[in-house]
Length: 130
Image (tube, rainbow, N blue to C red; front, side):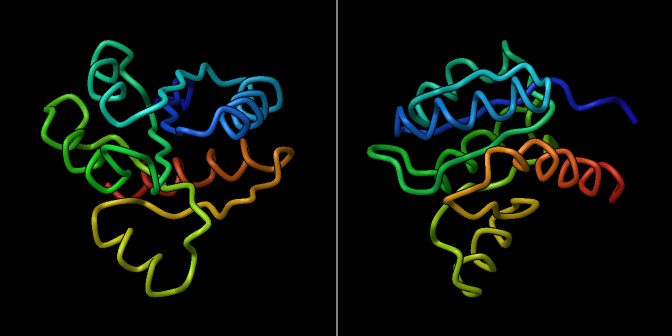
């Protein structure tokens, strides 16, 4: 198994972007590419070649589920593990997001000190499924 190094993070809220990027880069040691919209993620994802993708659910324009469906159409990204980061964490909401092809859902608000380990664990579980 390769290692988790590059994370594509799609989030429209600048404050959440900052906290998550710091948590993943400083605490986790990851290389993080932040995109502010689903459209930007589609433009930049293939060239960035992420090992994992984190998606906000509620974004203006292209929401997280739509972004996931579009990313899955790109051959180099169709098997990259994806987790949604959202405050929508009722059991039926989580089930719906996983049914779309996400590995898991990370609840907002998240703990910046444990986010990197949470993401690493999800990635390891996803890569162990094969």
